[in-house]
Image 1 (cartoon, helix red, strand yellow):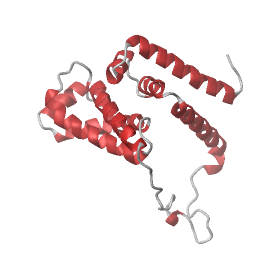
Image 2 (cartoon, one colour; image 1 turned 90 degrees about the horizontal axis):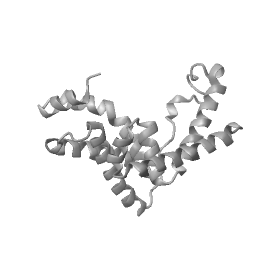
Image 3 (cartoon, helix red, strand yellow; image 1 turned 120 degrees about the vertical axis):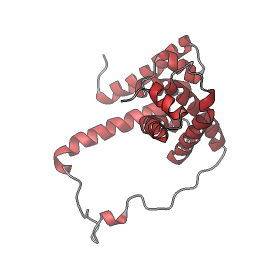
Length: 197
């Protein structure tokens, strides 16, 4: 994998493939982070697109005092916070479209082609989905700053220094927020999985 610094150099030289590589590398992480600030995936996708536009516009001004990833996430957080505030003042309209493509089912309502390995892996998939849903709910239930710090540290793998830079918080505050957020997630896991250590 090509280092960010090299992609940045190529991007500044006008290489469009460098931009595509950056998008492929960070778009998923940026979308996950944006979802923690806004009420829907559509809005999160819009925030990510706005962030990429801002990155292209601000590329000449990026001085490299932080890593490229930290700079991307800082722009995203600012845009996501603004969008989250704006969207909290509006009322979402439900999408009336079908949830699943009707062509996946036959006339009797059964699968046209059943999912592979359905029987063998059903229990482990159900358990994994249950645990994932439970953790997602617990993460979403954390107070905003705790959720942001846990996402950036534990999901996106940023260092504590990078998190402080992205969120504009002190090192001590970051440590407290991370400790409290992880503690609450641990409580949820322990109560769900039946045991405390």
